[in-house]
Image (cartoon, rainbow, N blue to C red; front, side, top):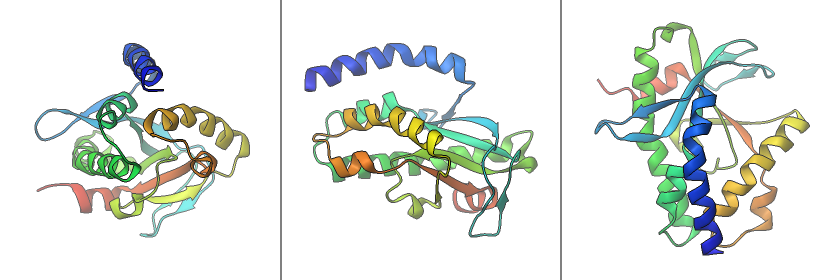
Length: 188
């Protein structure tokens, strides 16, 4: 399994720059000018309306920043770790470290005042509330199924043993309002 994982990671490392070219993603840089585990792009929201806990209403066609985890970078970092708790903690810390860069990106963007917040879709949503995210179920069963199928290979490559319960965990929307991101992560 380790050799298969390393082989797949090598192929993914090779293909990732090609994927990047076609997705309009932007790398975020942290304070030390290293690339973070988040890549972003602007998007118009197309789903059903959501009201966040701070009163922000996300509606169809609202401008959002869509966040994508840089999966190759995360998988490489996870490669030497043993235990699912250690891996989860590492991902949590990497995302937390990246959020100030995201806040700076949002604050300095020329459309900053129009951007309502950030959105992501993930199966790795355990602990995301502590970072300020809110989760919502994906109602469209076909979209949820497609996302689930896309995330399963990433999950299988990141764990030491595959849990049926974890494989059944549905992907969810992650949202954070503009105000919450800037209040919690923009350094003055």
